Image (cartoon, rainbow, N blue to C red):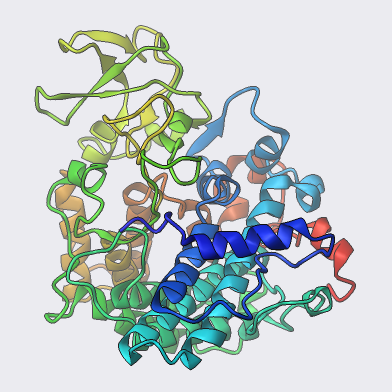
Length: 506
């Protein structure tokens, strides 16, 4: 099912609220008479997922995860907010509109999740298994939102019940990182205990494997951040080895569990990014967007962001080493591949040769533009291509959690065990590369996994966060290094001024 088809009762409730002169907090809608039927509960859960598909949020995944690293660069006439993030203009971060929107929609998601957590358990019309699933999804999405907020802003306000009045929005931020990460870990743990494991992935929805995958990412994040001396994280009252071990345990529920047969490695590198295969084995959590949607967010324009403008006509892209060519529109040149990143891949890496395009063709396979002849202004990421595009509309979707990501989480947390080597080497061999050197120390093995993540998860919104938890923002991002920023200056973005102006307790 497409989760974008929100039940009209929910949309109607939100519309009625907007007609009043009373100002409501983010995500508020009247619920006094709403949670009555199974359809109501389903609509309320869909309403949670709906919040992250707004373009102000979905595009921020790239702006905060990749554009601010050396992997991407914006076009010359990009918005001021994009240039501020790309160049690490610290003076403007409090008023940066991308950061403000990301923060806002995260709390919209949280408030909608809190409503489901509060209301669904008391519904008499639902079977217990349905209550468990819906509440589990709500815990997952609340945990996911706090996970994203904590990585970007550090200590943020914690709301664990629905916000229904303006007064309830003025709670202070969490007193330390231990408090906010405790909420994240508890939410993913609860979600894992309540959610079923889908026999086939359900596009746009989370299940038990996704919850365990995110729980593993949370444990790895804090363990590695403290291990590498990241500012603020070094003060957390956690045991690094214990958190690494818990990351391994959670990830193992996905990648080392014979009872889990829904997800696994896709042996075909191109198939992972085939828009016609959203339920492929790699996709633990994939955002739901479809070309048939009526408004942007229901459909996607992500592919337009990566592809350069070429001729305004249909272009064709070669499928790996085959003589198959698939059509695509050209684009807007918003997310431009950095040449330094393009040149940093190992020779023969198929993630470079197949997933970053340096020439495009006509329908007969003749080259019409390339970086060599200058008609292609930069090599572009082709992870987001839809041959069934309708004008600017596509079904391309952000990859929020892949099986390979969880496999690399397991490997980094575990260190050089046989299973960890097996997982990393599968990913490398799929990319056409040789195996990692045997007998690496724990430190060197983790460095190798960290490096592998950079190429395997490129353009999927993880790059900046990996640098942040490894305390490398100030050394491995050219703009930050050249400006002489310290690790302390870069560890978190400031909470947007729009929020601090409204909340005297921040």
